[in-house]
Length: 619
Picture 1 (spheres, rainbow, N blue to C red):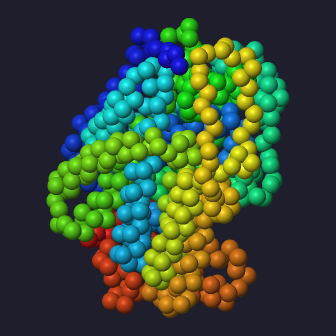
Picture 2 (picture 1 turned 45 degrees about the horizontal axis):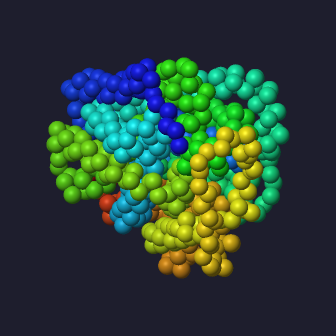
Picture 3 (picture 1 turned 180 degrees about the vertical axis):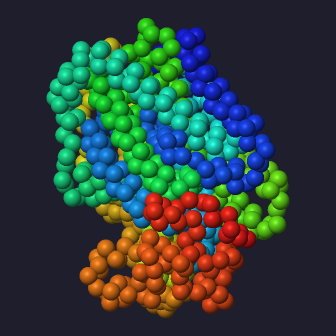
């Protein structure tokens, strides 16, 4: 394959991204040097506003996986990917209304602190370890993806790109902490949008107008979006994307430390919710840009598919190859696109490193060394950022073995995020679930999701289920390619065409539902949790929505928890009758006073801030 090279302006544009990103880290390191505490470093002093946090959330999860992978998915499987706007909407609503209020009001820094407050240390530490493994694996995929793009379009050394990415991310994350991460993400989000817009504009011009793009996409069956087939083995249908996608992304957003950490860094709960809803707008914009980029790319390659013809070696190389085709006479713009891909990577990796450092510091270091000084805590946090930066970068080597970046990344989130979503749902929604049910449910969910995901990796689903759309090579210029003989398929077990062929978007649902069902069953067998021992602030009273006509049924559903004692209500503003002591589930010492008093609540705005949380004693 002929590898096209960057011009001088491409390198200038690309280098500018790294320089500005690093500069933001240096800026906040200097600016915040007099406020050097672990809280300032890890959660930005809890004084962020919703604007930059919203941009940061969008940039972090719309990473190079989206920039490279989504157009390729649309090119091969059609525009049904746009149905993710339904999943994104449901995810943001559930996150902001179900999970965020509990995490924000409890004043925690690590989401896994909640698990100790609600259950015990064993559940907390198990979940923390699973999160660390999940995030390192996912970050490896995200680092590898843009390095592959750079290697494809310039011939630059693949692993040199990987380590350059890791070094820059680790540098500004270690120097500037969460504030540097958030503001760098905001800048990188702008780069991503500009990069996509240049592709959309130039690609449409090359295709003779956007109406031609849509016409050619329709002729190639790329616009068949809504398919109501309920078969769970189909790769992309309305149900797999809207239902399976909701479970997958809820595991990413609703209970993920990287997301929640930035939400609780906001100065009020209202700002945190606004950050999530404005982030939804960003998710829609990036999704639309990625889908239309895929359609434009199909229009360009409709008669000569570079992947089938052997011009490129992997589907994820389609979009960078396309970029070098349409911008061949416009120096600087290929560099802008690669900067777009790297922007998503830098933001995701930096957010992951910061989140990993936070959970490790809060869940392990502070447990072992409860009397660390502020200065030592800050240096420890920085050291953890450096350590996880090295681990995440090294993990990119394994990512080269995982196949397409979209499926690989969402599979990883589904395998770990689904059971984690189930675990937190058990804690928030089912007051009677005990710690044995929580731990047993988590392990059951992990077992089920890993079983189906690893089985699918070993025995890939047949084309009859994934249904890739036809690609043409009729007008390709003949090359000296050698066609390899088709591989002889090994004998497949019976599960390979059923259980292992389940759509990758359902991995999260399998883990979540398995965790919840096992947790409920184990709790019934081992003895239900006593409601009086549970702080009502740790439970989200969703049952009130379904039992609003009857106080009797509300009380029954909440198993003795004071379900009516929610801080917005007048009878709770002056305190709660819930007692905590030796008999309380909060005897673990994480808090020195009852959280049911809802510190920081402003009844006028019906929102919370962190002004009163300073009074809460951490261990």
